[in-house]
Length: 395
Image (cartoon, rainbow, N blue to C red; front, side):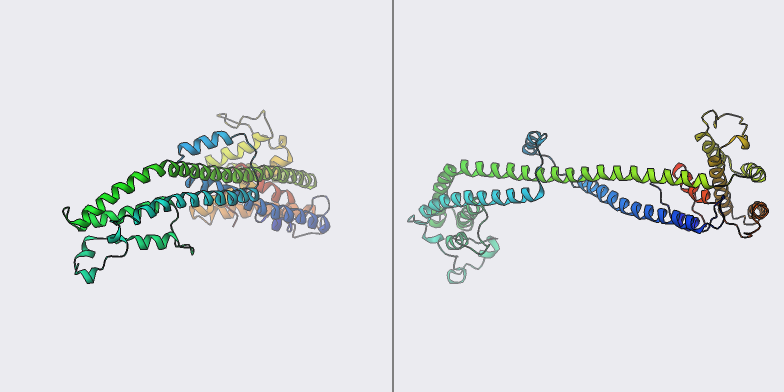
């Protein structure tokens, strides 16, 4: 929808052809225009919100994994729950997932106790005494030291510093043995002990791994499903907004159409002299603007062929709506051409001559109003032309 800035201002400066000085009717039209402008502003904001949602959605669209694709197929025809319901479901899923993960941690803790209670586990129970053992190059070789007591404390952590899942614990236990094997020579007892315990630990881990993988797959699918649910809900909300917006836009279009019909009915008829001046002004249009002017004529006159090599434009045969739209279009086109060319003399003088002629005619018809202003249909025709063709703004 094209902006209508200046429309109410123009309406406040016009006279009604059938009742000069009828300020009550003019104020009523101004009030209608103000209401429409306010409504359009609200619709523009709604439109921007919907547009921004889809732009963000397209730009941030994640790579669709196989699990997401499967979930989307299953959810294609299902009812989309409310956002509040989804939040509740997400909370319950997280609780259930937390309980399942605690059970896996409990089973892993049993494996951890078996390893730490082994007779060869004592070198790995506490942090390496680097200074006491004189291991001056230890931190140059080992990037991340790790020991069983550190792992145990983190497993028991209740302040949010603990392990999030079993795989994190598994990685740290392996790191204990890998560090020992890396720093100590293969023939060293610590190296042999670490290698032996690592093999035992891996055997027990393989027994728990299927359950871990099952839980990870389940969480991935639940997260994908929750993400898709939220996406579908958001799209449903935006779709409803778009439907409401379309209905409101249609309503505004009807209001504008009714307003235009009302104004046209109140417009005076264009005089013979004004038609003659309009025909002369048409000849001063650029080829491009002349084509646009002829298209305006063709809109309300299906038998008129605007694209023909030669056209015979009978001004007397045109409707008042067409004449007033042509007048507004020609005036704005000539002003724009004058500004772009920088020739502020010739065209302006011609326009002033036309304006003087119009003022003389107006004064003859309305002796009681020497300062007769633009007709109300000028203001209404202006947005109609703008919706048809993009024109430069008024100065």
